[in-house]
Amino acid sequence: MNILDENILESQRKSLQEWGIPFRQIGIEIGRKGMDDKEIIRLLIGLHQPTLFACERHFYKPGLCHPRYGLVFADVAQSEAAHCIRRVLRHREFNTHAKRMGVAIRATQTGLTVWRQHAGREIHYPWTD
Image (cartoon, rainbow, N blue to C red; front, side):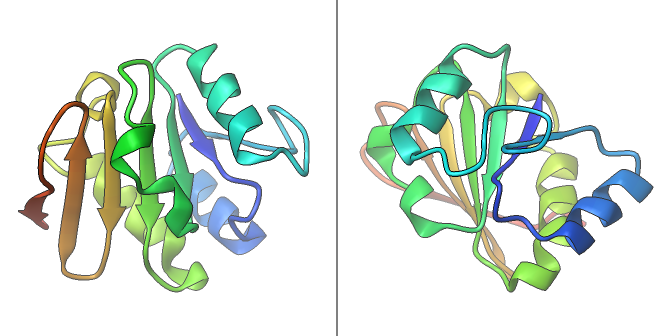
């Protein structure tokens, strides 16, 4: 299940819909507006294989890695979030829900930097498209 943080712009939400990418957005289809980070993490733990897509750096921390969810920090302009999300979902290392569990991903224009649960260092993956 793809979860969008409430701060993902409406224009980006529409792009994802047009591309047929399924998601639920916090404050619209799931949860409520104004949820704090701890509430979001509790929500994710209770869902089946969710990946949270956010434009906020504080979701990219090794201490937040958990086997029940994945986190993606789209470190791009907010107007580019949908393209970034689509690229992550198509990347061969992260193209299934199962592959995104237990990771925190920082997605930039140049590639992906990833913390995995219990890893001692970040791993970099170039874009494959």
